[in-house]
Amino acid sequence: MGTAMLSRAGMFRVSHGVAVDLNNRVFRLPSFHNVLEGEIFLQNLPSIVAAHALDPQRGERVLDMCAAPGGKTTAIAILMNDEGEIVAADRSHNKVLDVQRLSAEMGLTCITTCKLDALKSVCLPSTLSDSTTSVNGDSSVSLTSHSEVPSNEGIASDASGRSEAEKSCEENASTEQPNNGGDNVSQSEIRKNKGRLKNGRGRTQSQGGRAGKSKGFPPNSFDRVLLDAPCSALGLRPRLFAGLETVISLRNHGRYQRKMFDQAVQLVRVGGVLVYSTCTINPSENEAVVRYALDKYKFLSLATQHPRIGGPGLVGRCEFPDGYVEEWLKPGEEEMVQKFDPSSELDTIGFFIAKFSVGPKD
Ligand SMILES: C[S@@+](CC[C@H](N)C(=O)[O-])C[C@H]1O[C@@H](n2cnc3c(N)ncnc32)[C@H](O)[C@@H]1O
Image (tube, rainbow, N blue to C red):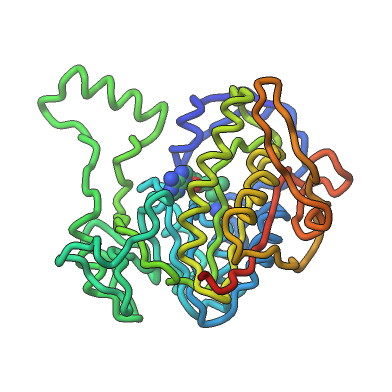
């Protein structure tokens, strides 16, 4: 229990300070602030399970489509022994910088990051302009590697020879900086700065780093793809705020996730693996997305997950009062997914994981 010291937006944006003044601790977890920095990173159990379910192998090429802040990206990199390539993408520039920072802090070099809207992840080679830089034979652009955190002076060069891509990245990167004052500071600037103190950096203002912008990737570019989709987060606890969700908004999350899935499925090569996960207990975003995927893409099949710690998914269908019908899992499929129930004795956040094998696509 505590008192919120920042607005909701501020809690997500600022990197220092007090977000919630705790006056009654629920958990007796010690603070790790500045202790063992780079050595440990607290993760929810289901997040680690999701990384293991992906089963990434050394030397493979992996895409993490919604990567920030990078918890699963770094877990995947560790499972790959930092050998291969993980492309960590996120729509938010500042959040991509968070992934960069975490990767650098953990000394992981196989992670490259980019700003990319997951809804536009697939890039057909014919749609690329002449100025597009080719990376390892594909058409993705503007990747930034993280052997060190990029600074304003330039983007760190990469041992894997991505310098051309990085040049392109520099061209695309946002260099907008807040006005930090000066002799002629307008009233509106003062107001803005007050807002920044309360809410943190603006969405488009970098904190000194740069995130390359990608135009997407050609189909079948990756051995494995993780789609840890943005969701209603109904499984998270403790909740610092109560989101205003309605039946319609919950359904809309599912629509958004299906569109992302449509992109993800194209990027995995035949024989590859796609893992879909959320931190919600809403079947519209979990079982219904799996049903959609299996019905639409006949070359997909549910794959066994290791380890298996969560419970089964929901079988059946749901008829809403407005006549909308949602199909969930079919008998036999429920044991192939993992559903973490926050009210179960397992004592985890609510989470859902589905793993798909990608068969021949035609
Ligand atoms: C559940 S969080 C990801 C957590 C992350 N995988 C981890 O383990 O640390 C969802 C992320 O999706 C990102 N996101 C939301 N919409 C997106 C979009 N259209 N394209 C790419 N990323 C998006 C958000 O910025 C957010 O960082």
